[in-house]
Length: 309
Image 1 (cartoon, one colour):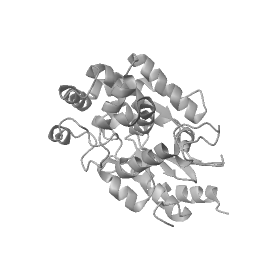
Image 2 (cartoon, rainbow, N blue to C red):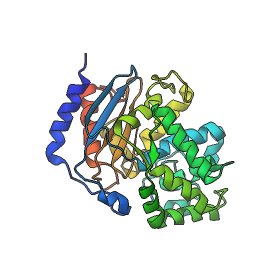
Image 3 (cartoon, rainbow, N blue to C red):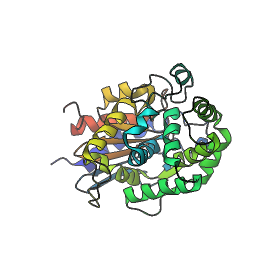
Image 4 (cartoon, helix red, strand yellow):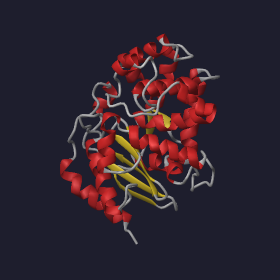
């Protein structure tokens, strides 16, 4: 049998001398204070086994990884109608680019770039006040992770609210094309709070486990989404989950994944496990530098790439 703990320990040791590489997302002031040498990794298998290494129990700002879960909520509320608002194609552009949005008539290329995620958040907000929508997202994350202590880091949320000028531009641009139903400031209030969710690698891996198990959370037995919907969310993670670095991540790692500028990555090995890694230093595409390397090493040593061992 594969010794996953030994594999994680070896990955941790192999990367220890490289801790601190990359650049933290200092354009969000609160994230600039995060220790760049932090590194944690968690693997939760579909049979419930949990393997941890490094700082895997320390909460961090999951940022754009939250987009996987708000997409899941939006699909539950609106079904396939969401694709009238947002596309399903890789962007090939930076995550906060406004150029493509103008060229394509206010339809964001996919739900994982910022413009697409803002459009999805607008759909989650439907029928709610912003406070109610934020509460729904937090409850959903607690339900998926089966833990009640998951919170929004209010300091990070305020930091994003104070400096998120590009996101305000994107939201107002969407609104100008008639692609937002709510005022931009209301949508962004929810968006900044969802990005400020704080989870540990262990909690994040548990929250994503339903995507590794055909839509069912194997720890609770609850069906979160249908098998088909889980497959489609995984497909979007594979093709769009790392912005303009998505192709390279698929090439090197071969797993559906979603990154965040807090340095986290959620990866899914369908039928096997959910994996979360955290290392705050980012590469040029805004994805965790050591996190990507760690997942490449894990996929190579386990044979979990969806493209074959």
